[in-house]
Length: 288
Length: 281
Image (cartoon, rainbow over all chains, first blue to last red; front, side, top):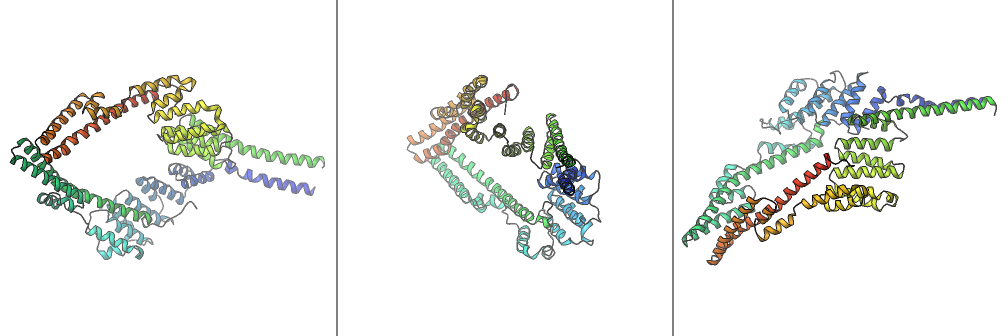
């Protein structure tokens, strides 16, 4: 009888996990909904994760879940919604400081630099806030993306960690005095010596070619008029004028293209730096 | 063993089996629910529910079906790369040759629609040499036809379609399209000998005549300069004007042929999408 009793207990211990897994059987129970939402979140299927988290929140309240929903919106690039969701994280919550930093990040990513600065001044700079340095880093960094006057060097640098200072100084100096080429200078140079404007904008071979064609056609025009071949004289003269005018205009345009390129590269460098530093926000791994 | 012991043992066995069946039942219900969403063309929700099924299906009973339906749902939403990812998961979990073949075909059809047709053809070549699927060679040829059709190789497509019994319609159609298309090499070749004739061949008469006139003018000026022993003038006009117009004429002839072909092909694809009732990728 004793053996039978032990056997029953043994069999029941095997069967109970199945029954206790009734939560696993009811796929839509809150606990299973959350489990599934976490899985979707970690699979980067953010839209579905949001749906599942919202379903879970119907029966309960959780700051951590609200925070994840906001992160999911941010990851999807829906910054407006993401900010609204981060705002839902209560002030007293442990996640509140991080939510504020994330709001700044979303404002940054959506290009609302003025709103970001207002938010920083209103909610962070005058308050007792442990992550003030991180927030100040992002605040200062925003000046590198706009044409607003930069803070003083000391004020700018002191927000960043010493490890990054060399890179930050490089960015600051570039922004303060960008190595741009002037369109007017390029145009005038090419008007005086065909092709010189192109060489000024680092287009050496284009400049040389412009010089050869302009001078070559002018010479041919002169030579044909001199020899009494008026059709060819006008033809080469027309080509010379065309090449000359095109070269002057092209040099001015080339300076603009050069400037656009260096600005594009600069912004890309800034973005790479920010991405590698997660916008100065501590990283939380929800998917351990 | 006494009778009481046997009864207790049977009871426990029943209890265990029932619990297992109960769990299975829920998974079946979830599968049916997800499939219903799929059949109702609610593909977003269908994907969610199939993913839920996969997440809770610890024994992997529905791994093939759920992954396949997720793939099919993504495919309906034209998310072909996602579809191929899930079809591949289905392929990895195929339980028999039929399922394996179906999932491979799903991958191929998605590749055709994604226009990665060279990959589709590679996969079809592999299937063709696979002895397990020798019975389904006509099906393989049929999809090879579609892969070549989407690769703009209408003649090859016609050849493969002609090897499948039921699709002489497609074969004839492909031959017709191939016949209607302009040859860009012929257009270019014509323009090499008589500038502008390539454009005229593709039906662009004004452009052809203009091209011919410009080439005659600059050709005359160039030759005239050489005759007058003004070699440098001849080289300058020849290089900067005649050669430029001549090259432009060649490029133009080729571009016109390609543009016209694009129109013909788009018309054909439009017919296949809306007018053809057979199986499509």
